[in-house]
Amino acid sequence: MIKTDILIIGAGPTGLFTVFEAGLLKLKCHLIDALPQPGGQCSEIYPKKPIYDIPAYPEILAGELTEKLLEQSKQFEPGFTLGERAETIEKQTDGTFLVTTNKGTQHCAPVVAIAGGLGSFEPRKPLLDNISNFEDKGVAYMIKDPEVYRDKRVVIAGGGDSALDWSIFLSDVAKEVTLIHRRTEFRGALDSVEKVQELKDKGLINLITPAEVTGLFGANHLEAIEVTKADEAPQRIETDAFIPLFGLSPKLGPIANWGLEIEKNAIKVNNALDYQTNIPGIFAIGDVNTYPGKLKLILCGFHEATLMCQAAYKIINPGKRLILKYTTVTGVDGFDGSRKEAPKSVVKSID
Figure (cartoon, rainbow, N blue to C red):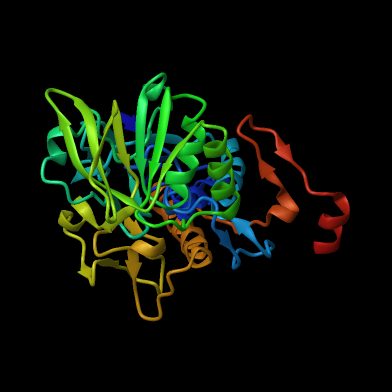
């Protein structure tokens, strides 16, 4: 049983920033995410995509934003349950919530903050009749541990950042890497495209474009794939693994069955107060929520997370007065209890 002050469903930018805001109030956080790493869409779908509307950053890559948020929050020692989906929630007799994942991991907290972005992400699967027969038997839709492919023959399909980045990474791990894309142009970052071409020229990556995987073969495990190019006969390639990286499809998932008020696949909240849902103690922040005038922007999620933490403090510490403090005056209390003081000149000017 994992116990914490605020249980955050979703480890995207809004969820990660919640850790920092809660930490300033001496509240501990634990995050659950179905993806194998923090960052949500920023890490999984477009890590090298530039973002232009984060305050103080004229431009920042999505993956770099995740790294900065993790660095900012690590002093408050958040816990993570990654690669697992929040499945059920139960209100306990003591008023806390028990959240259980699809793998049976149990979490208990007096406050739950749903920061699931557009929902839980499910992989977009290629239309191959027998692909389900090979799932976990050579077919995977995301890479959790690259070492699984050490000295293996790997085929990756896709044209985005994930397909390019993993092809580059696995070229140093796998025995053989083949990248297949249905177009000659790629959607990923230019430097990644150039790197793949460079590795192809060195014989470290097999690049087949424009082409599609049209068949899977094997007995108890994937043994080969069929590749079809326009106006050419199908070609069979022996392989140990096939990883189609076609992106993720957002779905609200099990959260839709938690008794929350839903509107157009989003959770309704009271934005006039604290972004609490129709169930006291459960909040929804970021892209997963909806209210009049809602804007699905990362910076709006940061704002919502800040107000939510203030309300969570009052639930966790009933009757205790919360005094608004400024980090420019008090500094940030580190996880070891030490205080990073602001310069005296700053404190004096404010006083």
